[in-house]
Length: 158
Length: 428
Ligand SMILES: Cc1ncc(COP(=O)(O)O)c(C=O)c1O
View (cartoon, helix red, strand yellow):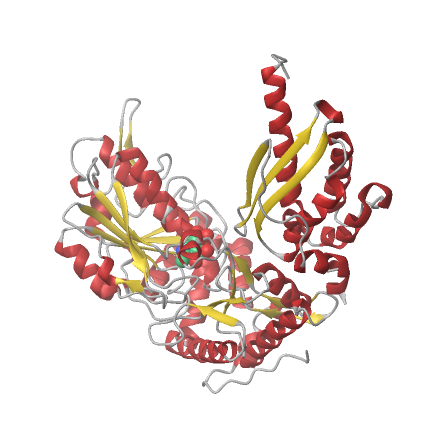
């Protein structure tokens, strides 16, 4: 059955018992992303320490309204990026995005993606790709806001 | 599930009808028979429609209302005959029917004609809007009958107001925002989410009392029940071909003839003119005035074939059949623990869009389980985001029917919803 391939047990676990849910202080940036086709939304905060690509993701907190795929992807995102550097988490983000948008043609790299390989099945359903990416794009945007404003206060042109 | 059967109590021979729709015979998702419950978004087309388009293109294709050769004559005849048949189907005169790309374009046409009227002095007084004037809509509108009015307000300084919706999914007539400042009241005939059929006569009466125009979004009514625009007394109405067994790329704007006569154009260019000079031009009478450029032609011919097809079945029959499916879907879904129907649960003044939520299972996930079983429904806000917000929801699941659907398909839907509950339940 196709369903089990898409909704791997680990996805359902994250959906039922999401990690790091809720909005917390302190945070450096907050973003709000919606999926206009279905109305799903996520408000997400990041707290970084340090600067540049070596900054470490201290915390990701969120409040999300959405399907199991978007909820589980956001929950798992926090496992994969908290405690790692911005550079490392963006490597994972890019691999995740490539897999999700790969229409099943992209071989996922488990070393980079960890548990997130479970989302490989989503790539076969184009309508659900946005669900899987909602939290990740909010994270990317939030990190960019922190680094952009840091760059601005330093007078650095980007 | 097993093969689709076509049991219904109504007089329709649905097996015979289904045989006209090639697409309904296909399978999806690894060989599962298709259960198509998304006709509210777009309907499937019978062979009669596909054949009519092909026959036109193979025999008569030419630019209409241009040229004097034989093909041009035949194409123009086919196009105008399509207009006449579609007009008769909705209780209008042919000259009151403007072909548009879809209903969305029809609404925009009126909205832009009104903002053009606001810019130019002279006639078209009743279309003019100024700061302080008001436009009235409802909270249950499709974005197509909401965003164009927001934009018109932005361009003219008019104010947007709306009727609320009751918890039961009916229009709240007590929240009446119509005042002597109201210039137009635009509302849906039948909600694409709730299924609610609105009291057109009452709304027209209230609008007329203050001299406001009315525009009826008939997208979800014309395909499913007998509709007569003259009898309803609305000033304007719109619908789309693709929701009524016809082609996409063709829709209709109906306007009472005195109004179309007085209304300034929206799109301008070829085919809509009377006289053209380098400095200035004058315009053709309606409906040509509103059909700039070479129009969709095979699509109009296809839509007329869809109208013929529906007429042969009888719109009363179509409505009765869909009412039966709606009754069955509401009763069966209501009986499932954890399922809540959004919209009226009685079938009085209610059409066949059945939207619902399932406790603990997001609409997308319900839709995925249904899709896995070959059942096509719509999930999300169905282009009625404010309405969903009104009910505190981001997304619902919507099943919608047409004349080719069966009670067995309703049962498949309900089984699928139960399967989704099981799949996402804690117990798995
Ligand atoms: C009630 C209602 N109004 C307007 C529309 C817009 O129709 P179209 O997209 O064909 O212009 C739809 C279709 O989705 C509808 O259901």
